[in-house]
Length: 173
Ligand code: FES
Ligand code: FES
Image 1: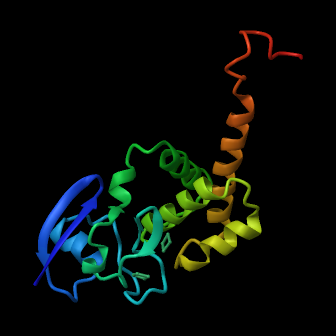
Image 2: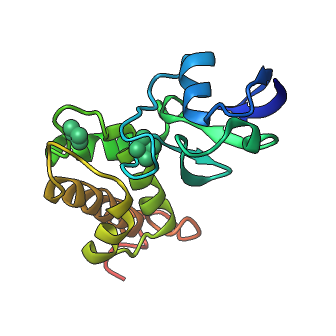
């Protein structure tokens, strides 16, 4: 056993783990964070994607011990996250899920696209999403959902009046 200390969803966790334990198994079985799904368990499908130090990462091929000192965020962390709320609404509106098995990983990747690449076009969205497989819905709705979230963010940014401008002066000038 090896001592592991890391932060998970904002809380410090210090425990003993087998060196061969993958992060996904550690999160699901030791911390009972079962929102992280396991599909292929060989780094192909992206269902197990979590954020490690802000980067979307496949937790099925990351050893837990290699995450010592890291900040891990799983889908549970994003319950009240405004970007994730926008994305969940967009996924629903665009029918971007059916069984939902791939959805936690898809949302993690989608949030990364929306926050890191605000100017992404559909081709870039598809490229960024290419590491996440969906076995039942297809990808058209997923791309549309991310497009919708990006467009909504642009629209709301453009609609915000300049905070230094006195009330009313932003109209028509
Ligand atoms: S379960 Fe990790 S990539 Fe498929
Ligand atoms: S919604 Fe079923 S695998 Fe994607």
